[in-house]
Length: 487
Image 1 (cartoon, rainbow, N blue to C red):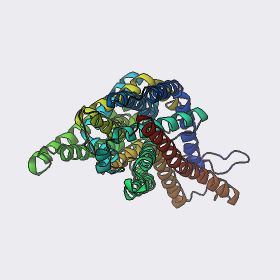
Image 2: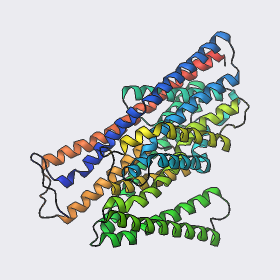
Image 3: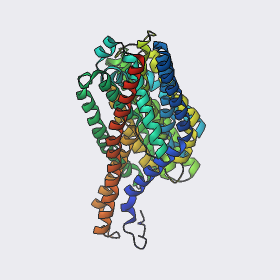
Image 4: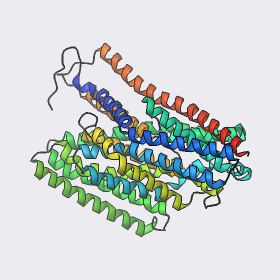
């Protein structure tokens, strides 16, 4: 493999891979903020409408549960649209950029996968947010649970709208957790909030990106050694890529059978389903790789990885729906239960999961095209190999967190995967010690450390700012709503 000559004033072109990928993530965040502008304007309208509802309740003295239910449905619907429009690029951007799928079919595919993830696997996170942060007994006994959760949604919506307006990318999951904690504290005091549960969730926000980095780094090492650096890349691709995708399909099938608890996860039925999924994944990928090789007339990385990227889109869309649907469905189920329209405290009906998942999917379809087009461009996307490793690692970690009922930030987990890929590549480069490439100068090492620290600092700052700000806004909204309702 030829070694790029360093440009004057710069050092080690191949040592700069991680810095370039982190720069693309920064560009992607800027693209998200730009693409979110239509949703941001819609958010301002939603918040203005909720403010009018609060004013009307205060003037008339009415506190009917259905008034709060209507406000809750409106805020929850906007949050679902925002989630669907903002996070779709994490799953679809690399595949569209690599030409694995068209924009419109990709949006439809991701939307369907999000709904499936929401309905099949979204219950654990939704139940954690509905009854695992604020004591469900206090929510039910006080009769103010619906107001508290409406305040939490409103506080999170206020912060997301404000942060988007000033150009600060934040996590919806972290915003919802902070909003619920603040609203619950304002209504029931510090003892009414399960701080141990919040601590466990916050710990997951740290651990999840690290796990994604380890998994993505391991995948990129395997991919480079077995395929991209093989003497016969085409032959290696036919051998390894179908096997890797087949294994993914088989493991995902086992996960689904256990999730659905239909008795097929044990014995021969489960093994038969997993084997069938593995065979289908292998055969489809083998045919796709062979077709791409014949079409391209060469064994470039991008055409080889198109089938694998397409599979990762499905898994990532499922993971996104499974985790982020709880941000809408969890608080909304309490609001619906408070109005006597079904639902309950800590129990999330399947209909609420379906409705929330469809709202997220609608946001993907209505507003996702603009963002995917920007992130899928040559300016912001990772290359096909690194994108596949990051996307798959992110999906696995997010699915694992969803199964444990832990809300995580998909974007932050993906950034952890980018770090893992970059460190793995540099570790491989250091081991080879090619004579044509000198050691990295100390000044370049210092510059790179500063760049990496800045990205870590950005993530930590988002955590440090989002939790207290949403807690403050959620608490203020809770106090105001309880005051106006006379509760």
